Image 1 (cartoon, one colour):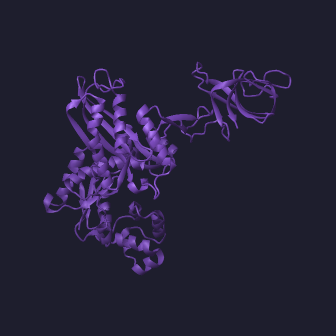
Image 2 (cartoon, one colour):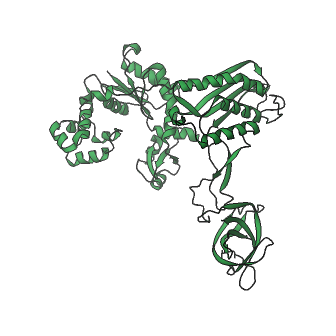
Image 3 (cartoon, helix red, strand yellow):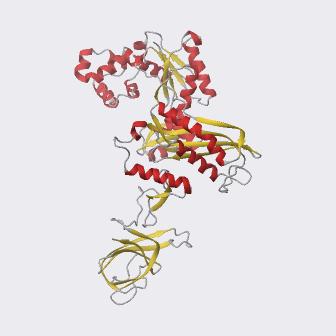
Length: 533
């Protein structure tokens, strides 16, 4: 069996530039741990190399675009390339993003070189301009041939000529083997032994390789000799994912939300039945509703999540909520009369697209039925179906300095994502433990020192006096047993109109009655933000 390998150089940079919307020929580098992981030809022409520090790479090329490493992004961007090759030659093996392998086509395309030329032309038409191909008896040799081929061309190694082709290659090509994590150490060892090429390494006796390098060394030794037939036979062909999308078309189009939901129920059940036949459940589904009105065709698309997994009733509820949110006076009619203003024509098609599927056994009920959590989720889902998607929310913890700023509410079933990540340092944040009660409206307070004067905080964050007594709202005065602070902050200084803008300082106060409070002093005014119980 002959192997054809297709290689798209610097694919991580290609995928990152495409995601960022930058020109494909712009000098760019993908960074990992502040070091260059991959750089393109434009960056290498300016002196940028793998392993360089960020500042060294920027010094060599000031206009260098620095992009973050993202293996998932690289794999997503490489998926259309695999699909394009599969249209011509089924049975593609995705080795890694930017590298693929297929069984070399023979007489059907007029020979191996003609087959590589057809693949190159197809990929160029699909927008992949830098693609190279190699053909050999084994996978390792075919990959090295592809790396040596010119752009949009192929390097064909004759049958039985793998050893001769690899003989003069430097030892550094061993670092391209993905399943050899100690490649750099192996190359360094072979260099110290006086070896420079793969041919010299292949000429060593098997007994010496076994004693010095063990089984991993023997596997590499067989590869450089072109004898690793098991490697090529073990290339796992990619199985294209099944098309699990379900849709229903309406002829004539429907202008009622209730009519659309009623007509979509059978499709939702068929969609879930197809997943169940593959022992899968959907936890994230994209609902698309197509329409064609006076302003032209359009689509309403939204991705919905579920805390457990979707049922047919859950999907219909999501369709109902989505269409209600996008209803306009000149389009769909709803019994509740809700207007949103995006969909402006009757619905022609509804489509369910599974974004995330999981094994069904991971969401199966226990031997004695579901627990209390399952009952709560079902009850909340019923309430949400009655009052609306946005009306049922759950609290999530986000980043912030004050207790109220760290609170956020997301609709039940949505992913708990916030605009202020908790991982940020947030200087000025109050240390733990967190207060138990956070007041929706801070309570006015007064804090005086031993001399009876109000305590304040200067512009430099210094306390003008030692807090001695405390009065909350219009209550009675009580002595302060202990206090801590201040924790000064200066938030949103550009928006002075906001009540939380400007410099402030927070204190922890404990009264003689044992109750503890979180107080904030802003512009000489004291407020109680939270309480510790």
